[in-house]
Amino acid sequence: MNHDLYMRRCFELASLGLGKVESNPLVGAVLVHDNQIIGEGYHEVFGGKHAEVNAIESVGKENQRLITESTLYVNLEPCCHTGKTPPCVDLILKNGIKRVVISNRDPNPQVAGKGIQKLLDEGIEVIEGILQGEGRWLNRRFFTFMEQGRPYVILKWAQTQDGFIGKQEEKVWISNHQSNQLSHKWRSEESAIMVATNTAALDNPRLNVREWTGKDPVRVVLDKSLRLPESLHLFDNTVRTIVYTEQDKASEENLEYSKLKFDDNLISNILSDLAQKQISSLIVEGGAVLLNAFLQQNLWDEARIIKSTKQLGQGVKSPELSNSSLLEEIKVGDDIIQFLKPKP
Image (tube, helix red, strand yellow):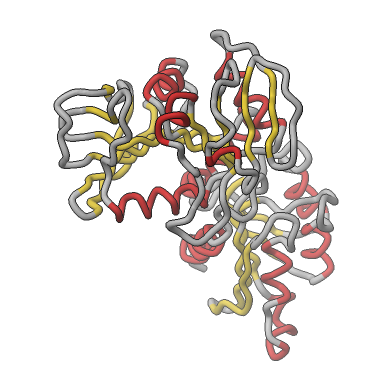
């Protein structure tokens, strides 16, 4: 059987859950009988049925007798513990499936090989490691969250042709409308979005996905001395918002104040706190000082830079990005967008 072909279909299905299942992983499953897909599914929403359940339930009545003779492909090791749903390993055994093909082991300590071992103990053939690198990239947010105890961090900014990201006291639009729409799509795919004090004060951003269809990320803002005016869009209570500050202030509906010391450990402490709040990915949109802090402390996993044809002549210099490798470059209108990751 062509394991790569069916595993890539699992990846395609799994990716449909992006932005809907965190802090759970992206999982797709495919049931194959005699080189024909008879059922498929994916984890659609946090707390909902897992991919294996949806794949098995999708099998038509005419093919249900074939389930015991089928191979189940799933990109992540089936769970063996009871969470919001029953263990998928038990479902596999109940349905008499004799062979399971997996891309990655689940890094969650509650699973971490235990699901595979239970299948093996019951005489099920298990093949693992199919397209392992691609599977890990698909679930890079989940692996980072589980293995490093922090959200997956994406740094994003737009810069002019002459290397500026804005002006000190003036709001400036740099990227084009299509790139702006794409930025809103990116927001819908991540758990949270962060800006620093000056960016919040100058730009008065909403940090939502009004240019796209999807969920709004949790908004995160730094405000050491609580100097930001309450009239800002960030404080309109429409979206869950976390304010990191050194001051004491009572939280209210959709507006949470978290007290932290603004010292050299601020960024790592924020990431640890966000992980405690089950936020598995974070997109950082500014400003330059905050972006550079993530870069200098090597607390980033991906950068997305929108390069415009516009020129400012002077202003706030774009962050210094070194020791990185280019993943991809695309053209959106007259903008060029670069996707980068840190070098190992």
